[in-house]
Image (tube, rainbow, N blue to C red; front, side, top):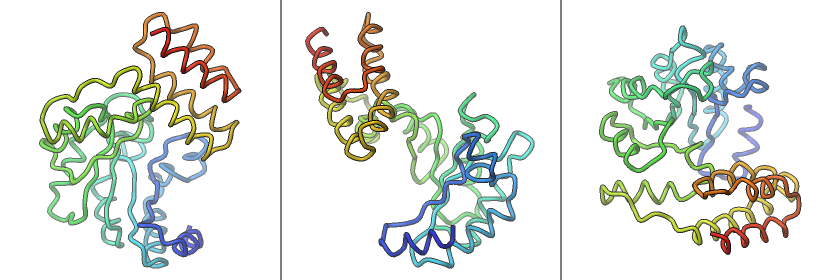
Length: 244
């Protein structure tokens, strides 16, 4: 990680964000991602070394703890701040929860209100609308909110949230034509970034949610999620526009 930080620093990004929050089994079970929550001394030591190895700001994303018996995020946040991180993003679930149940924002708020904490606290978990985002800001006082799964198949969520925070009302719903236009651009960028095979595979979960509100959509959805040809996928998107 230290060597990686040194290499990354040469490319002059805005910051280095360490992900101690990924709950995926193959990651966590080998001690990476949220797996570091089972070895807090190692987490702190690693973070300290990375901070010292770069002139870039270092931030951390993590969870409340490994499980309900080890919700140690209050202590962990303080210790990470002490070794020099510049901000912390906290997902309101334990690793054991994965993405089940509800995110516990009360603990996130407790950390924000901890007088020991001077760095920005970024809340994450179950933010799926502008109304919810405003509630999290107002009730828990976080400095910012991170959106993860809420943006899958709904990239306009960021626009929705900005609109609600400014106007305190919901913006006009995105039309089907706009969704199709976005889906095409999203698909194009996915192919450019990931290549054809992976780009198509990763877009399937997005396509499924883009159009989930359409009636009798199952046959088209099946074709959209099984096609392996970019041109065919674009044609299916055009077909949706015509049929609906």
